[in-house]
Image 1: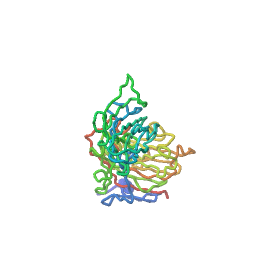
Image 2: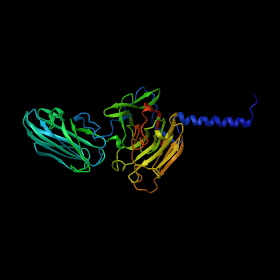
Image 3: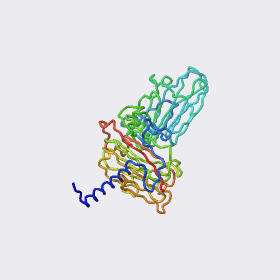
Image 4: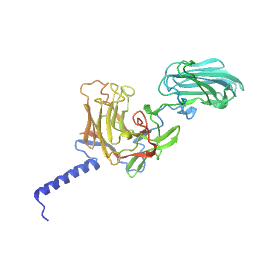
Length: 426
């Protein structure tokens, strides 16, 4: 068979092109860049020297009082701007000076034997307060707790300790309502002032213990509980697997994982080869947060989203930058870009961040879809001159991921990561 010269040229072109593509896909060397860190996930387990995990729901944790319930507000009751008064009798077993504790978000007052021993009647984050009072053994004392919630998550915990036992939750066996039930009678008012009105009647129920921490969701109203167990995060066949499951765990109905690098970098090329999860209600992300929070808490110190993907809009890849100047929903701003990758949930693609002192460039398969320049902007618009670390996760629900509900039939669903490579510019 005779091959014509121009056919040889065409074949040669495709051979060179395929070699370049193979180099980009499978070789860690890149022209103009030095490889400074990588994980090809060749080991059988996750290297704890390189990775750590965020755990829980993102809500504060007060382990000394046991596992708090995330279900506080009665069905159909306002979620914000309400108040509660709990009343009943406290039974003691020892003669001692007792220390009582409240953890609240927001205001709280505690009366024991008609003495006001804790008075924190003000909006505040989840804060522990304490007060002391001497009580005699085998006695019954009146107890009243008043609480108001202004907005956001709710926290209300009632604990105690004395010389005979350590700090702990006050259990229902030590609390009695005026009708003899274990616990305290709670009157829930649809206002912050503990007032009854003809228009809005209070809701009344018996609460056996006061131990609620709600509304975490990592600040996004998400539904999952992040774990570090192999069923949620593991290495299999050379891939890092993050798997989200429909299962009840510590008050959440879903489990997932959020893994992050222990290393941090200032500037470079960050390349993650990944296949994304499917399913309405999922919200997956490959992103970066500041390590030192030099400019203050989120969003002051910034956030870099290399990729966000919500299951109800499969294949649309969103890259974003959050700053104190513009945070939250960035649609239509200069701090966000999108690209359609139809096979994002079926095949592996390369998600890339190129970041230097003057510009941030976000790419998929080396195709840029979002750029943001520093120019002469102040730190409020460019806090990206500090160290950042990488995070990978799948959330369930949330303000964005759950905007069209959650399809429980899609679970379990998973994100697979083939490798992570970090470069600095030569």
